[in-house]
Image 1 (cartoon, rainbow, N blue to C red):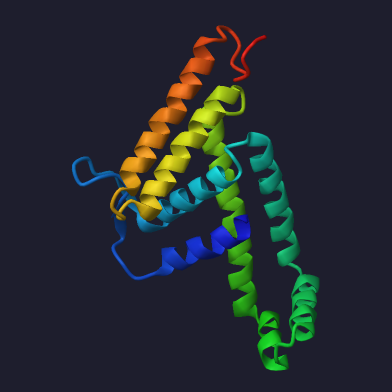
Image 2 (cartoon, rainbow, N blue to C red):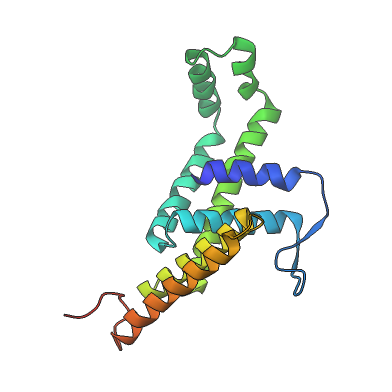
Length: 190
């Protein structure tokens, strides 16, 4: 998952367009440089996909770092070449992975996957999701809302429906929190 998000992120980062993007609203703009804005967005997609779970985010980061280390080896390039040939790709296309430019590009995707995992984990940690299950659930609900509005908010009714769902999710978590003073596990006591 992190690899495919990273590949898409890099495509958007390299698209022509303004050097800075407004990542908030017209009424209250927040400007970020293009690369940072896309990385933040894709890091939050990863955060949502992994349920803002710090353990899953750490595991994804560890796996992405291992994949990056492997992708830097000649053995990886040779294995990729062989896999492409077995899949029916022409020798010429399959051999592209053996050239420096395409290898650098592929390694860059793996590097960005590591970056996105680290960013998502940092967001979860900053929100207290590594210490508090209710904070994790709140972060997940808010991230799901933000991602929905970012991706589909221009469709009539989507932003409103997502806002309503977020309010309901947060109300439910507030009820859980109020019912368990001193216990933030998110599970009601018997």
